[in-house]
Image (cartoon, rainbow, N blue to C red):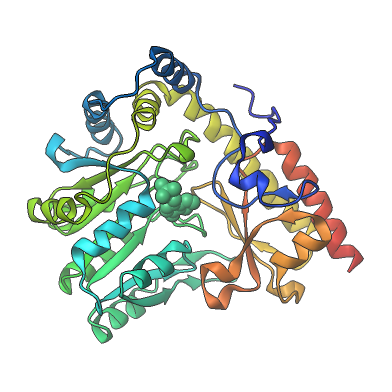
Length: 382
Ligand SMILES: Cc1ncc(COP(=O)(O)O)c(C=O)c1O
């Protein structure tokens, strides 16, 4: 697999590549510029060539493959009835919140946070409680457990949206952190809605641990969402997996979605099955490439972008940039206007993050070099 190959994506109406003018390099929304694994393309071609797209049982083999995967990766035993498929993790966690909460209930999550964590609960009439993470002088983020517990008690929080690996900081929470977190959640009877979409993109020295795999007590109060979408670059197909091990919660989830949110399409499930079954080699190579991109960026940002501090992602292909020392009011607007590089605006990850941006490094290295050159020049010429 040649991850250096530049593939024109504007011709496919890609959200990432179409929304900005032609002279802008888009390093924002979280998909990658790499071709999906050959096994995925082959499976899709075969399915398309069959030519009939009626209702099917594509989840059949997929469930088996996924159950084995959870066992192999996390020693986590999940069973067929505990699995269901949803067209997207955002859809999944919004359904979960509706299954767990009543309008007026409070939902908590850590900030900076993936933007739909703010909008989803609000549209369901829920109160959003933000719990800022602690940040040290090296831009490392960690959980403020005391504040978390205090906010839960103060606001009678009903549900917690867990995001691990965390977007945008790239944290992959370790077992000790997860156990402490779970202790607080169980103590105060808070349900967990777990977004683990980035679970497979984890770098050397770190590992992903599904929070529900910690213990029976935790899995009993948790609805987890995993997906092959980021892992194998098939986000536009919208295949995601819900794992709900408590029967009552699983029924509530099914009731909420019933008649409103159906299954992912046949093609989405076909791609997911092929990716999980035969995509391991591609993923290994992709992780090596991404990790090298991450390391190159960390080095070059520190050396060349004066006033910009990068958080070192342990996972995800996203890098969180603290631009406060540049004095720029909106680094997002500055880099878009002056460097023609489109990043994500930090403001969308929480009100206090207007001087931050997020960079997507799931792209050939040459694009990162172009972006860094332009960003360095823009900062120097200001
Ligand atoms: C943390 C997180 N959750 C969910 C999503 C999107 O999920 P989906 O497209 O499956 O709804 C993203 C995409 O960037 C994400 O970063």
